[in-house]
Figure (tube, rainbow, N blue to C red):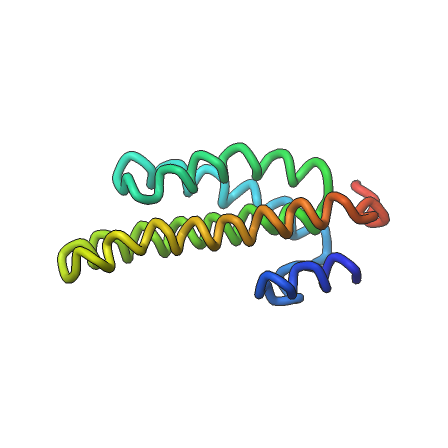
Length: 127
């Protein structure tokens, strides 16, 4: 439950942070290939996608709770990919702020990952 508390600090719902480990790993493995595929299409999302591709397999192996970082970051990537082209058409200022917002979400995910790995996440025994 300590991992849930850490995740709540970065606005991650507890239901997403502390699922049964049997569903955490499959979600991560599904989300991992989706995010990098968006990178060539949406340059603004590329930095997030590249980091997600590295983080997702590591978190799946180290801690089932931290594995939830992967789909959360993948979702952020999808949102940024959809909103940045629209913002670029409507307002140049908004287009500049979109990558910054995306990095804030990414930093929150990395904070959650670091915190969960520093705590005793391994009480959820891997299968």
